[in-house]
Picture (cartoon, rainbow, N blue to C red):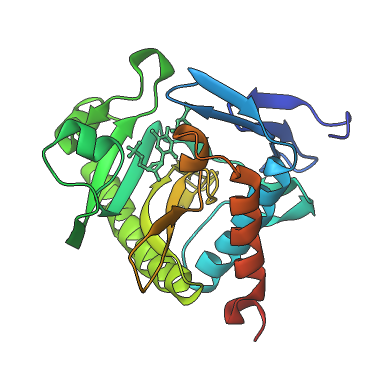
Length: 246
Ligand code: TMP
Ligand code: ASP
């Protein structure tokens, strides 16, 4: 990144820099991949660029569907300009299909498709290992008012409806995903963070024999290999989609 900008924050997968306009930030997507609260780490050259390009396209799709997001524009291939937000310390996970931690913590069978999506909240706190928390605990901790919590649930369900249809069109099953939200300078809630194969589970299901190929970070989490090929495939399908080629 151009060193005229100050580094405000560095996370596991992104760096946030100041912008000339105090209400904006520049977000750089890193090539680092982590899993299990960074117990597992690796670098994949070009991952930052792919996640940035994929996120930019997905944010555009959501903005076109009236979802308020922090995304403003791409700055270059691995950086984007976004509205500065005060991040709400919650990971909002929506699940359409049972997989991952849900199946480790419950008796729900992996691959179960839900009639109604399940929304889980996790406290963003590395020291506590991002614990699963309840709505009542969120209100008790004054992380969100009941109104804002309901607004976030409503937005998450709308985002799911848009993304599920979009990914289906490009031959992918949207299993689950994680969102983060924040408040802008007008105290309006915006979708923040990123939407990429790092925080979505995307399955390419073979129609004939039902075989599942994960095209997301599970390739790294579960040592399946070919992570960059999977991310490049997602990027290619998004770019080729009718949504972006009207
Ligand atoms: P989980 O099954 O491990 O709870 O993950 C659910 C979804 O949330 C999956 O799409 C991966 C995403 N996720 C993140 O983006 N960041 C995280 O720290 C975790 C644990 C999951
Ligand atoms: N982002 C998480 C981490 O390393 C984990 C994950 O995505 O599975 O900490």
